[in-house]
Length: 402
Image (cartoon, rainbow, N blue to C red; front, side, top):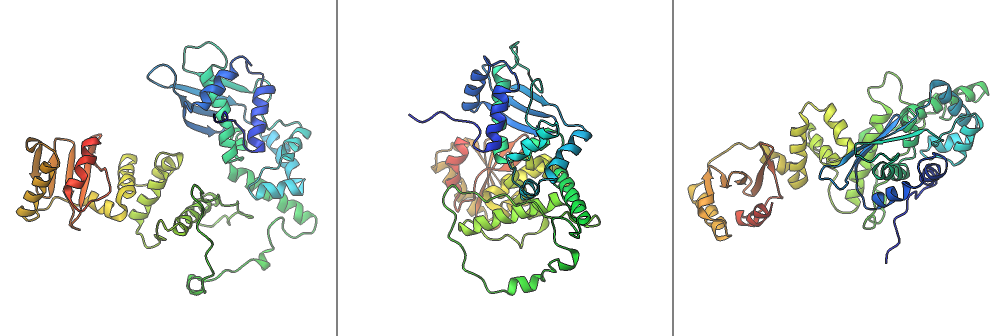
Protein backbone atom coordinates (compact mmCIF):
# COMPACT_ATOMS: atom_id res chain seq x y z
CA UNK A 1 0.00 0.00 0.00
CA UNK A 2 1.49 3.34 -1.08
CA UNK A 3 2.05 6.14 1.39
CA UNK A 4 -0.45 8.97 1.51
CA UNK A 5 0.39 12.06 -0.48
CA UNK A 6 2.02 14.77 1.62
CA UNK A 7 2.23 18.51 1.04
CA UNK A 8 5.25 20.75 1.27
CA UNK A 9 8.33 19.10 -0.27
CA UNK A 10 10.45 22.22 0.29
CA UNK A 11 10.89 24.25 3.44
CA UNK A 12 8.76 27.10 2.08
CA UNK A 13 6.00 24.70 1.02
CA UNK A 14 6.09 23.14 4.49
CA UNK A 15 6.15 26.59 6.09
CA UNK A 16 2.92 27.37 4.25
CA UNK A 17 1.31 24.17 5.57
CA UNK A 18 2.44 24.94 9.12
CA UNK A 19 0.98 28.44 8.88
CA UNK A 20 -2.22 27.06 7.37
CA UNK A 21 -2.74 24.51 10.12
CA UNK A 22 -1.44 26.38 13.16
CA UNK A 23 -1.49 30.14 12.60
CA UNK A 24 -4.17 31.03 10.07
CA UNK A 25 -6.92 29.93 12.50
CA UNK A 26 -9.10 28.23 9.93
CA UNK A 27 -11.67 25.73 11.21
CA UNK A 28 -9.51 22.69 12.13
CA UNK A 29 -12.47 20.36 11.63
CA UNK A 30 -12.69 21.29 7.94
CA UNK A 31 -9.02 20.93 7.02
CA UNK A 32 -8.90 17.08 6.98
CA UNK A 33 -11.61 16.92 4.29
CA UNK A 34 -9.69 19.50 2.33
CA UNK A 35 -6.53 17.37 2.52
CA UNK A 36 -8.50 14.41 1.17
CA UNK A 37 -9.84 16.43 -1.74
CA UNK A 38 -6.36 17.74 -2.49
CA UNK A 39 -4.94 14.20 -2.48
CA UNK A 40 -7.66 13.16 -4.93
CA UNK A 41 -6.49 15.85 -7.38
CA UNK A 42 -9.92 17.44 -7.51
CA UNK A 43 -8.60 20.98 -7.94
CA UNK A 44 -8.10 22.35 -11.44
CA UNK A 45 -6.62 25.50 -12.99
CA UNK A 46 -5.00 26.87 -9.85
CA UNK A 47 -3.77 30.43 -10.36
CA UNK A 48 -1.79 32.59 -7.96
CA UNK A 49 -1.81 36.36 -8.32
CA UNK A 50 -1.46 39.43 -6.14
CA UNK A 51 -3.68 38.96 -3.12
CA UNK A 52 -5.52 35.81 -4.13
CA UNK A 53 -5.55 32.19 -5.30
CA UNK A 54 -8.29 31.10 -7.70
CA UNK A 55 -9.17 27.56 -8.74
CA UNK A 56 -11.96 25.26 -9.80
CA UNK A 57 -12.61 22.16 -7.71
CA UNK A 58 -14.65 19.11 -8.69
CA UNK A 59 -17.34 18.20 -6.17
CA UNK A 60 -20.44 16.01 -6.25
CA UNK A 61 -22.21 18.13 -8.84
CA UNK A 62 -21.40 17.88 -12.57
CA UNK A 63 -20.01 21.43 -12.74
CA UNK A 64 -16.91 22.28 -10.68
CA UNK A 65 -17.05 24.88 -7.94
CA UNK A 66 -15.13 28.13 -8.10
CA UNK A 67 -12.80 28.86 -5.19
CA UNK A 68 -11.04 32.08 -4.35
CA UNK A 69 -8.71 32.39 -1.38
CA UNK A 70 -7.69 35.94 -0.53
CA UNK A 71 -4.46 36.83 1.24
CA UNK A 72 -3.79 40.38 2.36
CA UNK A 73 -1.21 42.10 0.10
CA UNK A 74 1.51 44.17 1.77
CA UNK A 75 1.36 47.95 1.60
CA UNK A 76 4.30 50.07 0.43
CA UNK A 77 5.66 50.54 3.96
CA UNK A 78 5.64 46.78 4.64
CA UNK A 79 7.46 46.09 1.37
CA UNK A 80 10.01 48.73 2.24
CA UNK A 81 10.68 47.20 5.65
CA UNK A 82 10.73 43.62 4.31
CA UNK A 83 13.15 44.24 1.43
CA UNK A 84 15.26 46.54 3.55
CA UNK A 85 15.67 43.75 6.11
CA UNK A 86 16.56 41.20 3.42
CA UNK A 87 19.04 43.53 1.71
CA UNK A 88 20.76 44.09 5.06
CA UNK A 89 21.62 40.37 5.26
CA UNK A 90 24.15 39.69 2.50
CA UNK A 91 23.66 35.91 2.56
CA UNK A 92 19.87 36.10 2.41
CA UNK A 93 19.97 38.73 -0.34
CA UNK A 94 22.46 36.70 -2.37
CA UNK A 95 20.29 33.58 -2.08
CA UNK A 96 17.22 35.50 -3.21
CA UNK A 97 19.08 37.04 -6.15
CA UNK A 98 20.10 33.50 -7.09
CA UNK A 99 16.46 32.39 -7.12
CA UNK A 100 16.42 30.72 -3.71
CA UNK A 101 14.42 31.61 -0.62
CA UNK A 102 16.51 31.26 2.53
CA UNK A 103 14.53 30.17 5.63
CA UNK A 104 16.00 33.11 7.53
CA UNK A 105 14.03 35.52 5.33
CA UNK A 106 10.86 34.76 7.30
CA UNK A 107 12.65 35.77 10.51
CA UNK A 108 14.12 38.84 8.79
CA UNK A 109 10.58 39.92 7.95
CA UNK A 110 9.24 39.16 11.40
CA UNK A 111 12.02 41.19 13.00
CA UNK A 112 10.70 44.31 11.28
CA UNK A 113 7.05 43.55 12.01
CA UNK A 114 6.11 41.87 8.71
CA UNK A 115 4.62 38.37 8.55
CA UNK A 116 5.48 36.83 5.20
CA UNK A 117 3.41 33.69 5.86
CA UNK A 118 -0.35 33.87 6.55
CA UNK A 119 -1.23 35.05 10.02
CA UNK A 120 -4.52 34.83 11.92
CA UNK A 121 -7.44 36.09 9.85
CA UNK A 122 -5.39 36.80 6.71
CA UNK A 123 -6.59 33.81 4.69
CA UNK A 124 -10.14 34.41 3.48
CA UNK A 125 -11.43 31.40 1.51
CA UNK A 126 -14.66 31.61 -0.47
CA UNK A 127 -16.37 28.96 -2.60
CA UNK A 128 -19.41 28.83 -4.87
CA UNK A 129 -20.66 25.62 -3.23
CA UNK A 130 -23.67 25.68 -0.85
CA UNK A 131 -21.60 24.58 2.17
CA UNK A 132 -21.77 27.26 4.89
CA UNK A 133 -18.51 26.18 6.56
CA UNK A 134 -15.47 28.46 6.41
CA UNK A 135 -13.51 26.97 4.81
CA UNK A 136 -15.48 24.33 2.97
CA UNK A 137 -13.59 21.23 1.84
CA UNK A 138 -13.14 22.66 -1.67
CA UNK A 139 -11.50 25.84 -0.42
CA UNK A 140 -9.42 23.90 2.10
CA UNK A 141 -8.14 21.68 -0.70
CA UNK A 142 -6.95 24.74 -2.62
CA UNK A 143 -5.21 26.06 0.49
CA UNK A 144 -3.23 22.82 0.73
CA UNK A 145 -2.37 22.77 -2.97
CA UNK A 146 -0.80 26.22 -2.71
CA UNK A 147 2.12 24.36 -1.11
CA UNK A 148 2.72 22.61 -4.44
CA UNK A 149 2.87 25.97 -6.20
CA UNK A 150 5.39 27.23 -3.64
CA UNK A 151 7.45 24.07 -4.01
CA UNK A 152 7.71 24.83 -7.74
CA UNK A 153 8.39 28.55 -7.31
CA UNK A 154 9.06 30.14 -3.91
CA UNK A 155 8.63 33.60 -5.44
CA UNK A 156 4.91 32.83 -5.61
CA UNK A 157 4.82 33.69 -1.91
CA UNK A 158 5.92 37.24 -2.73
CA UNK A 159 3.43 37.41 -5.58
CA UNK A 160 0.59 36.51 -3.22
CA UNK A 161 1.70 39.45 -1.10
CA UNK A 162 1.51 41.80 -4.07
CA UNK A 163 4.78 41.84 -6.01
CA UNK A 164 6.11 39.44 -8.65
CA UNK A 165 9.61 38.02 -9.00
CA UNK A 166 10.93 40.80 -11.24
CA UNK A 167 9.66 43.57 -8.96
CA UNK A 168 11.17 41.97 -5.86
CA UNK A 169 14.56 41.30 -7.49
CA UNK A 170 14.76 44.72 -9.12
CA UNK A 171 14.10 46.42 -5.76
CA UNK A 172 16.58 44.18 -3.99
CA UNK A 173 19.29 44.80 -6.61
CA UNK A 174 18.73 48.53 -6.32
CA UNK A 175 19.10 48.42 -2.54
CA UNK A 176 22.24 46.29 -2.73
CA UNK A 177 23.70 48.62 -5.35
CA UNK A 178 23.04 51.69 -3.22
CA UNK A 179 24.52 50.03 -0.13
CA UNK A 180 27.57 48.89 -2.10
CA UNK A 181 28.19 52.36 -3.48
CA UNK A 182 27.79 53.93 -0.04
CA UNK A 183 30.34 51.47 1.34
CA UNK A 184 32.81 52.32 -1.43
CA UNK A 185 32.19 49.08 -3.27
CA UNK A 186 31.47 50.90 -6.52
CA UNK A 187 28.18 49.29 -7.46
CA UNK A 188 26.41 46.56 -5.53
CA UNK A 189 26.13 42.88 -6.34
CA UNK A 190 27.14 43.03 -10.01
CA UNK A 191 30.61 43.71 -11.47
CA UNK A 192 31.70 47.28 -12.28
CA UNK A 193 30.76 48.45 -15.74
CA UNK A 194 34.43 48.63 -16.75
CA UNK A 195 34.87 44.97 -15.89
CA UNK A 196 31.75 43.71 -17.67
CA UNK A 197 32.06 40.83 -20.10
CA UNK A 198 32.04 42.16 -23.66
CA UNK A 199 30.93 38.76 -24.89
CA UNK A 200 31.61 37.47 -28.42
CA UNK A 201 30.01 37.57 -31.83
CA UNK A 202 27.65 34.80 -32.94
CA UNK A 203 30.22 33.68 -35.53
CA UNK A 204 32.87 33.29 -32.83
CA UNK A 205 30.49 31.35 -30.61
CA UNK A 206 29.49 28.90 -33.35
CA UNK A 207 33.09 28.39 -34.52
CA UNK A 208 34.34 27.24 -31.13
CA UNK A 209 35.39 23.60 -30.74
CA UNK A 210 32.64 21.53 -29.19
CA UNK A 211 33.24 20.09 -25.75
CA UNK A 212 32.01 16.62 -24.84
CA UNK A 213 28.29 16.72 -24.26
CA UNK A 214 26.96 15.44 -20.93
CA UNK A 215 25.13 12.15 -20.75
CA UNK A 216 21.44 12.31 -21.74
CA UNK A 217 19.08 13.27 -18.89
CA UNK A 218 17.47 10.26 -17.16
CA UNK A 219 13.83 9.39 -17.93
CA UNK A 220 11.39 11.65 -16.13
CA UNK A 221 13.96 14.44 -15.74
CA UNK A 222 13.03 17.97 -16.73
CA UNK A 223 15.06 21.07 -17.63
CA UNK A 224 15.70 23.37 -14.70
CA UNK A 225 14.59 26.97 -14.33
CA UNK A 226 17.01 29.75 -15.28
CA UNK A 227 18.56 31.67 -12.41
CA UNK A 228 17.60 35.34 -12.00
CA UNK A 229 19.86 37.90 -13.62
CA UNK A 230 22.42 39.55 -11.40
CA UNK A 231 21.58 42.98 -12.84
CA UNK A 232 18.57 44.43 -14.63
CA UNK A 233 18.78 45.25 -18.35
CA UNK A 234 19.44 48.92 -19.13
CA UNK A 235 16.33 51.08 -19.15
CA UNK A 236 16.67 51.71 -22.90
CA UNK A 237 17.13 48.01 -23.76
CA UNK A 238 14.53 46.56 -26.18
CA UNK A 239 13.89 43.64 -23.81
CA UNK A 240 13.07 43.01 -20.16
CA UNK A 241 14.36 40.65 -17.49
CA UNK A 242 11.11 38.70 -17.75
CA UNK A 243 11.53 38.36 -21.51
CA UNK A 244 15.11 37.17 -21.12
CA UNK A 245 13.97 34.57 -18.62
CA UNK A 246 11.41 33.26 -21.11
CA UNK A 247 14.08 32.98 -23.80
CA UNK A 248 16.53 31.26 -21.44
CA UNK A 249 13.89 28.75 -20.32
CA UNK A 250 12.98 28.05 -23.94
CA UNK A 251 16.64 27.53 -24.89
CA UNK A 252 17.11 25.18 -21.93
CA UNK A 253 14.07 23.13 -22.96
CA UNK A 254 15.30 22.80 -26.55
CA UNK A 255 18.80 21.84 -25.37
CA UNK A 256 17.30 19.28 -23.00
CA UNK A 257 15.32 17.71 -25.85
CA UNK A 258 18.39 17.61 -28.06
CA UNK A 259 20.37 15.91 -25.28
CA UNK A 260 17.66 13.25 -25.12
CA UNK A 261 17.72 12.81 -28.90
CA UNK A 262 14.12 14.06 -29.18
CA UNK A 263 14.60 16.98 -31.54
CA UNK A 264 16.86 19.54 -33.18
CA UNK A 265 17.68 23.10 -32.21
CA UNK A 266 14.82 24.54 -34.31
CA UNK A 267 16.83 27.75 -34.66
CA UNK A 268 16.04 27.89 -38.38
CA UNK A 269 12.29 28.36 -37.90
CA UNK A 270 10.50 31.40 -39.25
CA UNK A 271 8.44 33.65 -36.94
CA UNK A 272 5.11 31.87 -37.58
CA UNK A 273 6.53 28.38 -37.06
CA UNK A 274 8.44 29.45 -33.94
CA UNK A 275 5.28 31.00 -32.50
CA UNK A 276 3.40 27.74 -33.12
CA UNK A 277 6.22 25.76 -31.49
CA UNK A 278 6.16 27.94 -28.37
CA UNK A 279 2.36 27.81 -28.26
CA UNK A 280 2.49 24.00 -28.47
CA UNK A 281 4.77 23.90 -25.41
CA UNK A 282 2.53 26.32 -23.50
CA UNK A 283 -0.86 24.93 -24.55
CA UNK A 284 -3.02 24.17 -21.52
CA UNK A 285 -1.04 26.38 -19.12
CA UNK A 286 -0.90 30.01 -18.06
CA UNK A 287 2.00 30.61 -20.43
CA UNK A 288 -0.34 30.12 -23.39
CA UNK A 289 -2.58 32.98 -22.28
CA UNK A 290 0.39 35.33 -22.06
CA UNK A 291 1.66 34.22 -25.46
CA UNK A 292 -1.81 34.66 -26.98
CA UNK A 293 -2.05 38.17 -25.56
CA UNK A 294 1.14 39.12 -27.44
CA UNK A 295 0.20 37.35 -30.66
CA UNK A 296 -1.53 38.93 -33.63
CA UNK A 297 -3.62 35.76 -33.89
CA UNK A 298 -6.88 35.08 -32.08
CA UNK A 299 -6.36 32.61 -29.20
CA UNK A 300 -8.47 29.94 -30.93
CA UNK A 301 -6.34 30.18 -34.09
CA UNK A 302 -3.10 30.11 -32.09
CA UNK A 303 -4.34 26.99 -30.28
CA UNK A 304 -5.24 25.43 -33.63
CA UNK A 305 -1.71 25.97 -34.88
CA UNK A 306 -0.24 24.74 -31.61
CA UNK A 307 -2.14 21.45 -31.93
CA UNK A 308 -0.97 21.08 -35.54
CA UNK A 309 2.62 21.63 -34.41
CA UNK A 310 2.30 19.01 -31.69
CA UNK A 311 1.18 16.43 -34.22
CA UNK A 312 3.46 17.16 -37.14
CA UNK A 313 5.66 20.22 -36.59
CA UNK A 314 6.18 22.37 -39.68
CA UNK A 315 4.45 19.73 -41.82
CA UNK A 316 1.36 20.11 -39.65
CA UNK A 317 1.29 23.87 -40.19
CA UNK A 318 1.66 23.38 -43.92
CA UNK A 319 -1.20 20.86 -43.99
CA UNK A 320 -3.32 23.27 -41.95
CA UNK A 321 -2.94 26.05 -44.51
CA UNK A 322 -2.96 23.91 -47.65
CA UNK A 323 -5.91 24.64 -49.93
CA UNK A 324 -7.99 21.99 -51.67
CA UNK A 325 -6.30 20.55 -54.78
CA UNK A 326 -6.98 17.72 -57.24
CA UNK A 327 -4.76 14.62 -57.13
CA UNK A 328 -5.12 12.02 -59.91
CA UNK A 329 -8.62 10.42 -59.77
CA UNK A 330 -7.08 6.96 -59.49
CA UNK A 331 -5.25 8.01 -56.33
CA UNK A 332 -8.43 9.18 -54.61
CA UNK A 333 -10.41 6.15 -55.80
CA UNK A 334 -7.79 3.88 -54.25
CA UNK A 335 -7.93 5.93 -51.05
CA UNK A 336 -11.72 5.56 -50.86
CA UNK A 337 -11.45 1.80 -51.37
CA UNK A 338 -8.81 1.57 -48.62
CA UNK A 339 -11.07 3.43 -46.18
CA UNK A 340 -13.98 1.13 -47.04
CA UNK A 341 -11.74 -1.90 -46.54
CA UNK A 342 -10.83 -0.53 -43.13
CA UNK A 343 -14.47 -0.79 -42.06
CA UNK A 344 -16.11 2.53 -42.92
CA UNK A 345 -19.44 2.17 -44.79
CA UNK A 346 -19.19 3.49 -48.34
CA UNK A 347 -22.35 5.56 -47.72
CA UNK A 348 -20.47 7.67 -45.15
CA UNK A 349 -17.60 8.50 -47.50
CA UNK A 350 -17.39 11.46 -49.85
CA UNK A 351 -14.38 12.39 -51.97
CA UNK A 352 -13.78 16.05 -52.76
CA UNK A 353 -10.48 16.98 -54.35
CA UNK A 354 -7.68 15.76 -52.07
CA UNK A 355 -10.10 15.08 -49.19
CA UNK A 356 -11.86 11.92 -48.12
CA UNK A 357 -14.71 12.99 -45.85
CA UNK A 358 -16.01 10.49 -43.30
CA UNK A 359 -19.34 11.83 -42.14
CA UNK A 360 -19.52 15.55 -41.39
CA UNK A 361 -16.75 15.89 -38.82
CA UNK A 362 -13.73 13.92 -40.10
CA UNK A 363 -11.58 14.41 -43.18
CA UNK A 364 -8.54 12.51 -44.38
CA UNK A 365 -6.52 14.91 -46.53
CA UNK A 366 -3.77 14.01 -48.94
CA UNK A 367 -0.96 16.55 -48.65
CA UNK A 368 1.20 17.64 -51.51
CA UNK A 369 4.05 15.88 -49.68
CA UNK A 370 2.31 12.55 -50.43
CA UNK A 371 1.25 11.86 -46.84
CA UNK A 372 -2.23 11.72 -45.33
CA UNK A 373 -3.46 13.99 -42.55
CA UNK A 374 -6.48 13.43 -40.35
CA UNK A 375 -8.61 16.49 -39.59
CA UNK A 376 -11.53 16.72 -37.21
CA UNK A 377 -13.99 19.57 -36.86
CA UNK A 378 -13.78 21.27 -33.47
CA UNK A 379 -15.96 24.26 -32.59
CA UNK A 380 -16.72 24.77 -36.26
CA UNK A 381 -13.05 24.75 -37.39
CA UNK A 382 -10.96 21.98 -38.89
CA UNK A 383 -8.13 20.91 -36.60
CA UNK A 384 -5.32 18.45 -37.19
CA UNK A 385 -6.11 15.39 -35.10
CA UNK A 386 -3.20 12.96 -35.47
CA UNK A 387 0.35 12.57 -36.81
CA UNK A 388 0.50 12.04 -40.60
CA UNK A 389 0.42 8.58 -42.17
CA UNK A 390 1.57 7.10 -45.45
CA UNK A 391 -1.81 5.50 -46.19
CA UNK A 392 -5.34 6.80 -45.43
CA UNK A 393 -6.56 3.58 -43.83
CA UNK A 394 -3.90 4.00 -41.13
CA UNK A 395 -5.92 6.96 -39.85
CA UNK A 396 -9.36 5.33 -40.02
CA UNK A 397 -9.16 3.63 -36.62
CA UNK A 398 -7.90 6.86 -35.06
CA UNK A 399 -10.72 8.87 -36.58
CA UNK A 400 -13.37 6.33 -35.70
CA UNK A 401 -12.31 6.30 -32.03
CA UNK A 402 -11.68 10.07 -31.87
